[in-house]
Image 1 (tube, rainbow, N blue to C red):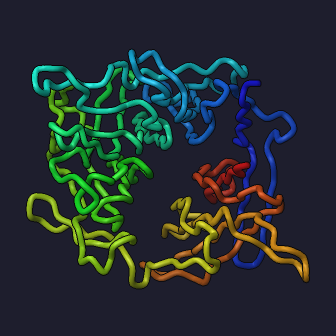
Image 2: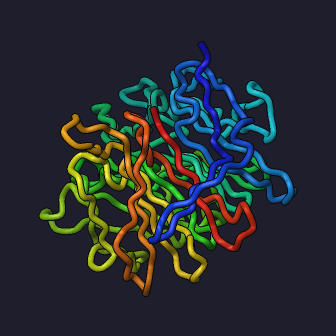
Length: 370
């Protein structure tokens, strides 16, 4: 059987501190897209609006275990372009990368320099005004050339001009390997664009899992890009660096770019803490102005949150927390939105919808993952 991915593009849940309201658009006639069996089609999703046609929308769907036409690569992963409206089998793979592994000579024989099989390309995908980024957080790089040691540094690809130009961005593919460096970075585990269109990439495994954030301009990534430039620093790139070892296993750190400091909001008054251990609080995060006051609000998903009713066994339903901003970096107490389906994992993914009903407020879409 083919795996089905039903895009709940049409449901909106709008909330305020005093209560919760909801309405549905065409919920009885959802658009359904079908991907290859076992490909994890639907693992990530985002809307796409081509820069050359402002009235035409489509949907980009990640399938991180899909096979591609790349020679010698097994389950590289892929991102599918699905026209909307469309038929179940109308999706097609986007050719972000058609190449085999890069090779190097070791003791007279050619061996892989990188490892794209099972790299989970398409695990994350985001769009912004015609720009697209998709990432493979399990992409491996041969950090020690002679021994063949490989580390999961992760990599991303950007596309512009309606998929006519592509470039790779792998900020953790450096000569700083192993867990204490960027060897376990897994760049692209999370990815997004700023309002200005600057790319932001998360690497949770850097520096003994303190984690790392990298940011660069898309134009700078594209300019001067070459397949031969394996180790490349993008002009104007900014990234966080390692903190003291007391912060291992939790992202924290100063940041710099060419010896100039990068201010990154972290901890302090903007620190959000979950209420239940092992709820996966922070698995998904989205930022938008929900109440139209000009300040960004934050939604945080905890898809493994468990709810207990009376003396019954706890039910894993998932929960989403809404933090409304009342002043710069100061938030009201969170409003909790709890799922209703046992094992539904409500809050697995959260993404902005925009003002779909023209009431002046931005909405959010939330996905349930089974």
